[in-house]
Length: 155
Image (cartoon, rainbow, N blue to C red; front, side, top):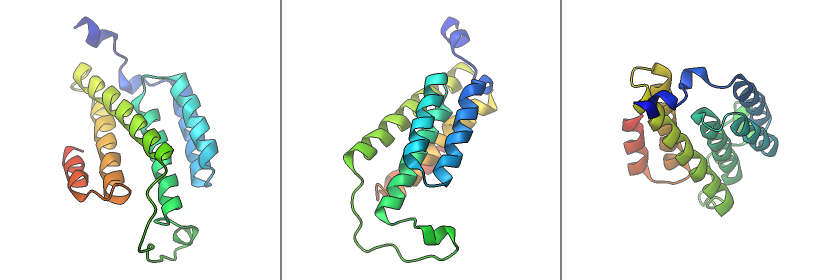
């Protein structure tokens, strides 16, 4: 019980971390993936126990991989959808490792928050959103439909 009491309540995430995530999100939507990654890193430094920052950085990595693989193009933003290329490159090892590391950290923190605060809706949201990101990544980049459905059920 002492450990549960010492774990931060996810509903009370650091305000600086939230503001930095919002800034990073704008950078990502403007396709400044490097700037977004750096700003998410600042958000993590501001609150290393907030699963949302790790999940957000993993999501930014996923979007960068999607653009690199041609699954999302600037034309998609303009309302024109093109068929994805028949053969897609695998993501660079550095991006795949960053995604996995950030997602695993977000998952660990979210699970701990649910264990410590089982009646907190925000804790459950953080865990479900992390599984949702895993499902999306598995289906698009990992090309593993089975893993995607498993993660989606858990979400």
